[in-house]
Image (tube, rainbow, N blue to C red; front, side, top):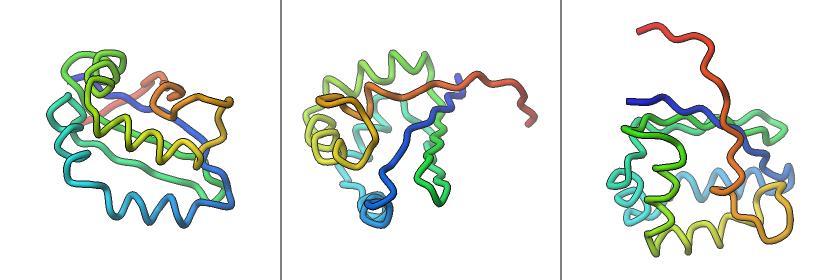
Amino acid sequence: MKRIGFILKVKQEVIEEYKHHHRNVWPEMQEALKATGWHNYSLFMRDDGLLFGYFETPESLEAAQAAMRKREVNARWQAMMSSFFELPPGAHPDQMLIQMEEVFHID
């Protein structure tokens, strides 16, 4: 498994609503993530909205993203969540993940 770390920025004024949506992720979205290689997936957020995500996948970030793009539920989720992030106009959050380099790991 490859370990993937990424960052995004949630707008400060919608942090609580963003958290609410993630306490209630649609079951079909959770199923799609698991089916497309997003395992051991976690999101962490600072008070200012800086979001760190981590997941494990058999191939790569690009492969996991490509698999999710084929899922209709992902299109609906991304459309709903796009307004929560500091992104260029028309961009979807799943297209703007800034992948971080893993510099240390211990089991």
